[in-house]
Picture 1 (cartoon, rainbow, N blue to C red):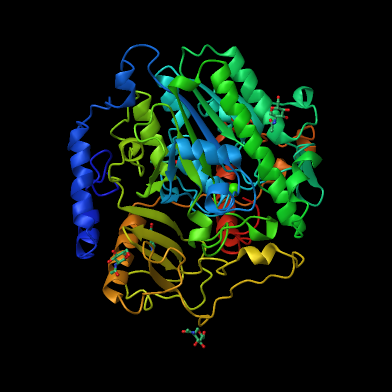
Picture 2: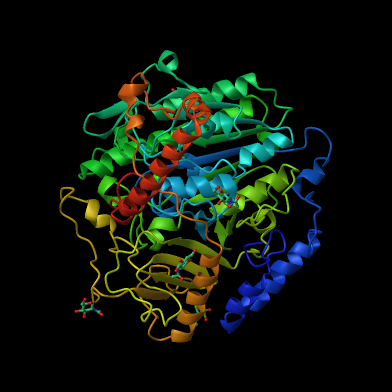
Length: 592
Ligand SMILES: *[C@@H]1O[C@H](CO)[C@@H](O)[C@H](O)[C@H]1NC(C)=O
Ligand SMILES: *[C@@H]1O[C@H](CO)[C@@H](O)[C@H](O)[C@H]1NC(C)=O
Ligand SMILES: *[C@@H]1O[C@H](CO)[C@@H](O)[C@H](O)[C@H]1NC(C)=O
Ligand SMILES: *[C@@H]1O[C@H](CO)[C@@H](O)[C@H](O)[C@H]1NC(C)=O
Ligand SMILES: *[C@@H]1O[C@H](CO)[C@@H](O)[C@H](O)[C@H]1NC(C)=O
Ligand SMILES: [Ca+2]
């Protein structure tokens, strides 16, 4: 029990109580109590193991075969907070607006600031400090992937009879076969393994000359199935095929991770129709891409209805991180962008649409995090959460469906021990509790604390996209002394992070630093290996794909003891190199 006795579902571990309790006057305790009561009412008291829940399924005959809901999880890539009609965007998203309006809008919803981190947390229900992926993204040339001993959501859903399908972008590593989506719980996979690529050709150059093809059907390059269609349309067609060929009386989990609206900024001509007047070329292209994505979601919804899934389905829509203003995305009025721990990087567009919701047409302002889908969906699917998986997510179905208080009072946004670029950071600045050179961020009820260098920190208002070229920004620049390494905000009162309260509430700062320090004690080592030249697609038939061959490993281990010794030494050298490289990692804004 590395996590100090803090286990799901009874999450009121001592550390949390202390940390939160001292933050008096925030009605945290009443929130906690309420959250605790709601656990009780679920029959999930201390040590409770009854994972079966009551809820929407019950009215439709819980336990009866066929009552498990179909789960459709749609993840958009790099869609900014303001890049949806109902958040005031100039880009029209009639489908998203309608589905959200008829469902439950999540308006206090958090994800991680980049692709791999959000995807890893969604699929495991765990923070990055508990999977080793706390630094940056998985790069195509790195021998790294979601650790094979971390249990995934599709694996859990398969256990209880779900048919599991993934369409779209994986970005959780592929250096060996065991890392592939089909080995990590999906019956079928159609999509890409990397973080980005051409929307039509599915080629990607990671660096000059290191290029390859990246479209897969299950474990093989999908040359034969590649008809050069724009990926948003191609993935939607695949979803339609899956739905058409599956029996709707059997539960299905469909994870649709669209490539849109991540760069490169490409869209078919017809989607530019309404946006010719947007002068900023990046924003115009982004608008077209988003328009197409919106149409795709409409097509998916129509297919769910046409083939008989809709009545017993839960559609969850989420962005994976904030928008990248340089690539057309907008997070206004939030601060910062993709790749940062400002709200613009992590506060996301999200909603749930389902005939099974009780409070249809409502707005949920309770704290919800991307790790919460794991326990929520497994519980809805009548699956079992093993007591020994230490989850960071909470079952938030009643919060969403019935408007109850969220059981969640805090979010560890991240601790990245490798990213220590804040030059003036120190243990002193962290009251001897925490080294503020480290990039970290944590939320506890209203409070959010950031340390280190949180990343690009301007506000980018809509006018920034108006007439100037992409190089001329009318940002609201931040004026602070460059040496700052601690910030404290009351996010509820100040969601735009304009008033830093760290000097005014040093005791709150200390409490939050202590909480960070507690989380840090449960962290596993960072996995961020140096690139492996064997990853070059040229050595792999022109395809990005698993390059670490099991046979090779076997042959090696079959050799003499002497050979093994040599190998060990080699590994040692590698580990040292890894350390050196990690400290000089590339910008967080790249990729993801
Ligand atoms: C995930 O995998 C990593 C690497 O093997 C391991 O250290 C960690 O304990 C695992 N975490 C969980 C919660 O399974
Ligand atoms: C949606 O379906 C229509 C009608 O079949 C089709 O013309 C359109 O290309 C589809 N759009 C997307 C994005 O899949
Ligand atoms: C976090 O934990 C690691 C050990 O896992 C330790 O080396 C490091 O000093 C800790 N960092 C802080 C800021 O406490
Ligand atoms: C940051 O450190 C430099 C010296 O390394 C110092 O000159 C500067 O005053 C510091 N800034 C702050 C705000 O502490
Ligand atoms: C934080 O903001 C909320 C909402 O405005 C308010 O209720 C709470 O009292 C604030 N906390 C502090 C310490 O100002
Ligand atoms: Ca992303």
